[in-house]
Length: 535
Image (cartoon, rainbow, N blue to C red; front, top):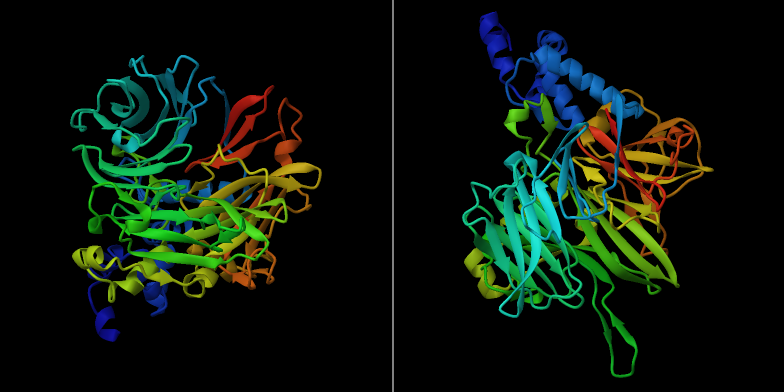
């Protein structure tokens, strides 16, 4: 140590300046000199505060590290108190399709024309592109607009995916040909789920009886994966290599007209590098592994499962925006929604899983897993039992039976938002699963709350708590055996949204999240609008 401190001060500072936040915190524990440096150097403090906020630094701009640190601290203070700095309202247009992604809210009107709002206030309309918009998505960082159109040609109905510029509506210059085309197995009352991850575009086609998941390289037009089967309810990118597929049990009718039911749900992890692009049934896919949920109780039956995470794992805002910081790519929160029928009652369970839990499972299997060629030959599909990953690596909470299946942008980075009852009012809750923020709050003596198990009857303008106690569900409650989950999180809840006296206040269908905004949705017949609260 004495040898290290004998180095010239300029050299020591140069070394410390190039350390990341983890090494800075380690150095802080070495001696008083390093502690004093870390505690008072603006750049060191900025790196640490970024990590605590779950953010990473943005591109160079006129903002100094001191400026960015000040903006970051003000932003975090606003989120902790759920006190917004500005409020905008936007009416819902009549096109019934919308998207919220990357700081932008886009809607189609009754004529199919798209209006894009860069939150909180910049807005533009995309000229008529001559496309009948069936559904759409976007990636503002790549100036990418993805439009799904159903077209009949040669007596066959085709699903056509148009790749356009989000700014102008013109064919995207990076997209070879500008169109991806697919002929579904059956086209009826189809719905679509569209997601991107860098150069990958995923499209889930959901028909009445069949479902197909296609992954393209949207820039070259090459098909990377095509799987099909009725048991593909949703998907999410874990990275640009790994894809998550939730899968709930099959229900079969036996010869004596009784139900035969596999009582376990699972999340399948597919390695894109180990799969060929030809059409493949899901049960024939050589997936990397599956993470198993506990077995359900005899009176509980899963009816649906969904998975959501935003933004994409490698996503960053466009450098042209020169944002001071953005959501860190080091971790993402995945929200799995399990819907059950239990003794004729509808139940909703929410399972919160950070990307680090999935990546840890992959890393643990890496030494024993076969390579891509061997996987295709042996159909290896190791199942990771619940006890290995679930209790410490996830958190179960009760969801509301009224939870919307439409307004699903409720997760961003490591945060989750929802509307819930609080006494006679509605409240908005925000849950933050950033573990570094949890550890700091614990070290600073934050109030430790109990299990946030479901809708409560508490009241008050603002409630905030650190949730460390586990969620414990006794045997037979939802699962066959007792289930405990203990991933900690921070919880903020505000109820003043319902007492402002203006039309529609307190009548919220859902809460959605963006990096800097909380969006409260009212979709009743007489009140149809978005309230954008910017922090």
